Image (cartoon, rainbow, N blue to C red; front, side):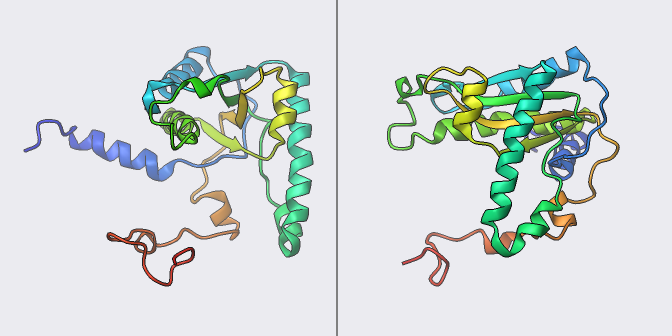
Amino acid sequence: MNPHRYAQPEIEAIYRVIRERRDMRHFLPDAVAPELLQRLLQAAHHAPSVGFMQPWRFLRIRSAALRRQIHALVEQERIATAQALGQREQEFMRLKVEGILECGEVLVAALMDQRERHVFGRRTMPQMDLASLSCALQNMWLAARAEGLGMGWVSLFDPAALAQLLRMPDGAAPVAVLCLGHVPAFYDKPMLEQEQWAARQPLADLVFDDHWPAGEEGSA
């Protein structure tokens, strides 16, 4: 018997929240209680980070005018993305890709400035700062789902334009616009799977032993 193992109901709850987490785009306008928002931010802040650098920074967007400006940036990139998709342009334009104007809270998750000071774990892989922030966002996502709140990660924006809009210092980089709030319902499946945009790949096709298999894309 493993003495470090959680009780079975707790284990089942962890796997359940992983399965049922969704990238949400449909929200109710109801406010998020301040203490609940604080719990979600604490969950993010307890994420692992390479060299314990804690590169995450969160900007809570409280101004309605600023929220509309962020939405306008996202809309610009949504149109540009659709055009870049070629034959799938109209199919993409029918998708709902964000809920910035509807959700209870909008947060912008960013990487801090002066990250070059942190060498531990990043000397050959500087992108590990982004990996660390991604862990923080996943923590928040799972905590939000457990609390009954939806969260959506929006990446359709010009980072330089958003950084300027938010008056970020040189070197800081916005990574995600987070839509957070109450929802009418959670999707049964990931929305892009429901809309038949893409399908989940079989795990067996993504796990290899020892070497990259011959014939796989990118192999020599």
